[in-house]
Image: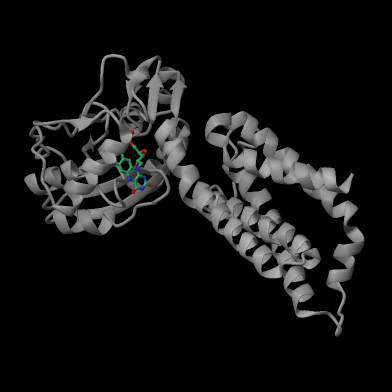
Length: 360
Ligand SMILES: Cc1cc2nc3c(=O)[nH]c(=O)nc-3n(C[C@H](O)[C@H](O)[C@H](O)COP(=O)(O)O)c2cc1C
């Protein structure tokens, strides 16, 4: 029974890492199964857990390390349980603590890595070839960290097409502000050379609203327009667009950043507005270079510049500092940085942010 629960625990952890392919609801249900399995595991191993909590001067160094790992796993799992409810969109949408998806990612990854060490140490104790076993455990731990911190977020950005209903996600409660606001946004869609059959594009990482292709940041701009009744203007390239393949776009964008390029864009007139909400995706840890062109082309003196970023794990990266350097005279106000998966459901957060930050 114990071994079955152990195997299932590892299996569910791996499946949870592949949430990109499973979707949100299976991820949340599996999350609950994981914690049920973990409680079963704790009940089955209760004698062992009691023993590790007791003082024992004769304990070997290896046993002490192993016990600490177990304690860390228990604490990590407890915090992860709270964070899982915090980021839940379907089963616990009312839960208001620890709603940070990045923290959730770090907690899930550290639990996987600690569990690899925990399981590995059982083999190590019995193993005749200790060096080889230790090497394999170290390798698997690194693999778990790379999987959780880099590979899963990358796969998520690279392969997913999300389909949503436009009106369900965009329309809702309104807000008003005293400031005359313009939303300017940059998004990949509209600035990319997609082939006619977008479904055939490999690695597209796309969002479809009522079957129509939209950028994450574009969807967010549409929400802002619905909430505020403000105008929204896309930053549009004049010249060559980005390639349809995600990977190729990453390469081109990397080169542009390295060369501090300023791709030419269509003019945007911000002169009649008190404040600008600038919404942009994080590219290579900062703004895409066409956003730099927009910032340098305009006079922000006396204007507030509210920042909204969308990203796959980087938060604001260095974008706030970079924008402050480029937008001469602007009062730069960091707003929200939203994880790409959360964008379809971000409308309420945007409205709360507007009510708290801009309305006053
Ligand atoms: C060229 C490129 C580079 C990216 N670099 C990062 C990055 O450094 N950090 C990150 O968290 N997300 C990165 N992303 C992911 C995007 O920020 C994220 O998917 C965003 O929501 C895309 O918005 P859009 O659909 O409006 O273009 C990158 C995406 C692209 C296309």
